[in-house]
Length: 282
Image 1: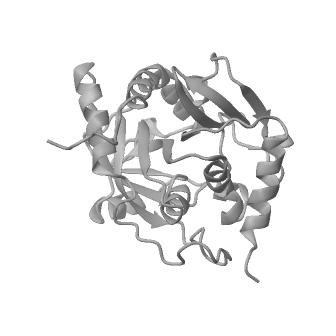
Image 2 (image 1 turned 180 degrees about the vertical axis):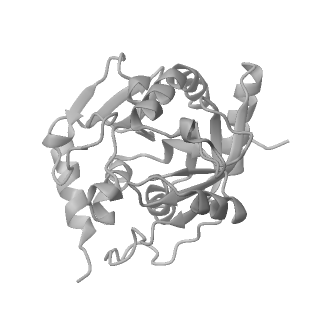
């Protein structure tokens, strides 16, 4: 039976609107270990997920579970400190519910961040890599079984991550003497990490980084016509010939992401001020 997602979204939005009528322009999803990005700011509203209808509590360390509403400088944002993952057992319509809720709150664009393993040999822990495209290997799609008559059933994914968004970010990084990569993100269901054969396969099909989130959120954003700035923090090397000494732990992922967070915050703060209505590529 199709899921009547509109009713679920409306109930979640009503929970938020009972506490604030703030209207954000940009939505931000903070990935593993990146919740510290905005922790010290003064917010108009901070709402625990437990107080939002249909929002489950994240079970993974590094995902706090709080909705943040307020300004970065003068820019109105809505930030999710913590996400729900498919591997936690949630259905896709719940994994992507926050995107639909932020859209209903008024956002016009979405920033999706994540912690990812570097498949590209040049990607090192602590690097920032922009997502120029993705490959969906979840074995599922968040639009399957969703009943949304007012939205396209077959949305195009060809311009999900607009080039102007990425170019502006690159220019800001260059002016700060920071190196930023770009690549294709491979989304997998998890929670087990990848085998050497899987990593080799991801490289063969054009992947540069791999993670267990982002793709479902980006698909829903495309259906809602929300342009996406996708950002991976490379937290570990994910190569098929690594020694056992380089086995990845979640604690390692959180630490590297947390260490990179201040650098990422500086760039995001500048990027939010770019006027894309007047922006042109050279």
